[in-house]
Amino acid sequence: MKTAAFFDVDGTLYTANMWRGLMQYVAQNGRRARTRAYFYGLMPLYVMRKLRLIREETFRKPWVSKLGWLIQGWSAAQGDAAFRWVANEYVRPSARADVIARLREHTAQGHAVFLVSAMLKPTLRAIGEPLGITDVIGTEIEIKNDRYTGAITSRVCMGAAKGAMTREFLDARGIAIDFAACYAYADSFSDLSLFEMVGHPIAVYPDAELAAHARAKNWEIMNGTRTNADERG
Image (cartoon, rainbow, N blue to C red; front, side, top):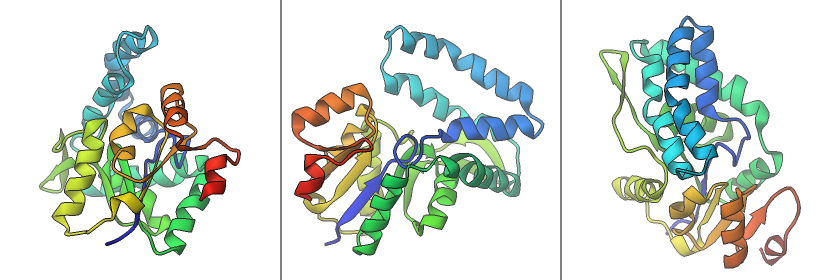
């Protein structure tokens, strides 16, 4: 059985958000009005979140589930150009060097490394390429007749679905994992389903709710300084 390391992307490996990068690219490539409609249509959720009327997951999920609409009608080549720009020009410069270093340590040890994110899978593939990662678990977007329909064809890979979709991915490919020996890296309390799968959960620059939970559970916390859990190994 394999030992694996599962890495969230936005807020964990990188500080930039992929959905913001896609918005910027689309706006710069002839769809400014559509981008504004997307953004302002979802702004009420932002207000509700700031007022603490809804949870983080409830706020974030529609931003992903409606993201495909931004590139609806684009060819596969146009979409590929967008996803590569987001990965290479928008996201990659915001890398957290310490977390990338940890990922490379796992690779050097022969561990299977997976990217697990709510974001669209084509973007995750582009992110994973220079890291040598081909296994990505994320939200599926539909292509028909070489064009993006705008439809999301899977659950949004967020919250409880994150852990479930990771297990489904592994089962579908017959990848046998020793979960007790595995690692998970993420920054949000909404990633709890991913943490609970593994024997070594690591909270990375965590939000307040995750930080409190991690301290209560004596999990390792990466926040730019070495911790006791780092010394334990």
